[in-house]
Length: 55
Length: 434
Image (cartoon, rainbow over all chains, first blue to last red; front, side, top):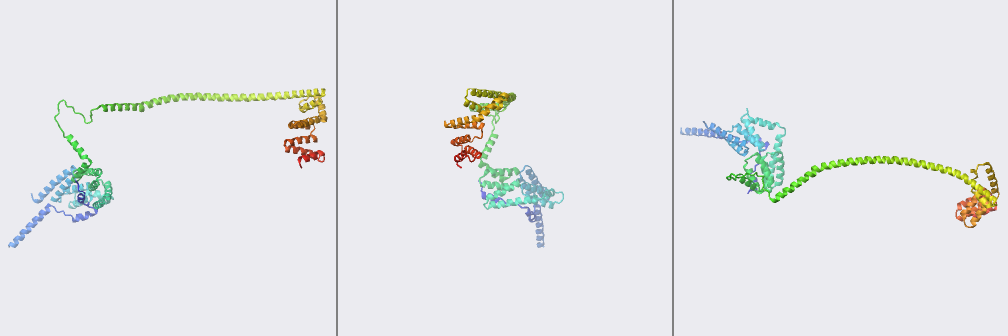
């Protein structure tokens, strides 16, 4: 049977038109490519750091 | 193939799946696929535009704008999102209306979550009236109706949701609960069972249409009764009116003929009545003329007869009778010269002594208790000699005796005026009382 209160709590307010600008500015557009690139960059950076410490 | 190309390919796979789902109106499933597609490649403009389109279709206009604005920024050239944005922003007041409805939904949600379901329902009904594809509003409205156990209305809202988003999981679940509570689930289960119940058909099996039903005895009787009723109704409503109209027409013609005859007869009667009246007038006129002639001739004859009787009374020396007859004689109607001379002689005799005979007759009648006759004799006496004070006095006394004081006083006045100093004048004053 349905739990009315629980169901009601699942409803979230809709994004209002006035809030679109803030949503765009604060929105996270990071995709898998960005993450991979970050990971690659981080890996390179770690490698360079390790080499410098070895030297 | 590097990682970026791999991500792009995966993104495309999700986009294609999302597109397929959107094409069969599985909008929730499509939105999930498109979001995954964008997670792998945020530059997948088609995926982002389609996601915006789905958001717009389910009533989330702000979300749609968000996706299209981002899409336009990531790919400013040759982007369908620009067209969508232009369409929405180009219509005056459209964005404001959308904003109002979304805000109203948010208010309704707050009210619903704060145990103010009735107010929330009112708000949501206004929202879905103006924005019928707003799935979230429909869903919340359905949930509130379900909370009030008004499953019929909840079902209607959910039906609209499932028309827009065919596989919306939450709407489907709500709908299953609604169907269970309204008994609809059992009906559908039975239909499904019938639809999938198969058996091996024999050669002599007959496929009966679902509408076919075996007639029972009662049904046969009912059908016969219904047939009779229909037949009676047919006769009553289709045949009877035309027959009735024909009969009415022929009756009207007959009545018109009779009325014409009646009018003619009335006109004849009128003309005959007029003729009869004219004849009556003529007859009355002729009768009047005849009676006039008869009267004229009869009067003259009567006067001659009267004169003859007067002369006869003279010859018999019956002066009293002669005087009485003379009093009724109209000598003017006798125009013969010799007769006029005779009448003149008689008149002289009457003026000399006949008046007194008449006065005596009056006094005798008075004494005999006949005042009317007495007055008549007195008047005849006065006709021969008008200024006879004694006769005037006697007549006045008779009138006074009858109670006709005015006439009596008038006569007393004549006596007093004619000779105020006479004894009779004195008696008249005494009798009159002044």
